[in-house]
Length: 102
Image (cartoon, rainbow, N blue to C red; front, side, top):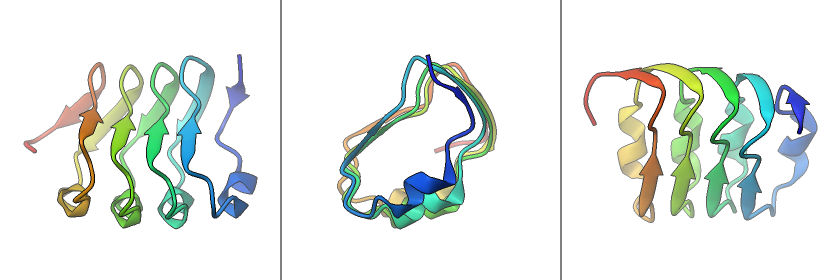
C-alpha cells in the first residue's frame, strides 16, 4: 500500500499513458501537474483518501479516455472544463462529495 501524497516527481513523466494508483492509502489533493501529462489515456486514483476538488488542468489531457476518482473524499463542483475531453468514454466519480450538475 502506497501512502502519502502524489509525488511531484511524477510530473516529469511526459510520455506516461496509464496512471493507476488505485486501492492505496494516498492522501492530499490531486496535483495540478496532472494536466501536463498530456499523453495519459487512463487516470485511476480510486479507493484512496484524496480530498479537494478536481483540478481544471485535467481538462488539458485531450487523449484521456478513462478517468476514475471513485471512493475518495473529494468535494466541490465538477469542472465544466471536463466537457472538453472529447475522447473521454468513462468518468467514475462515485463515493465522493461532489455538488452541482454535470
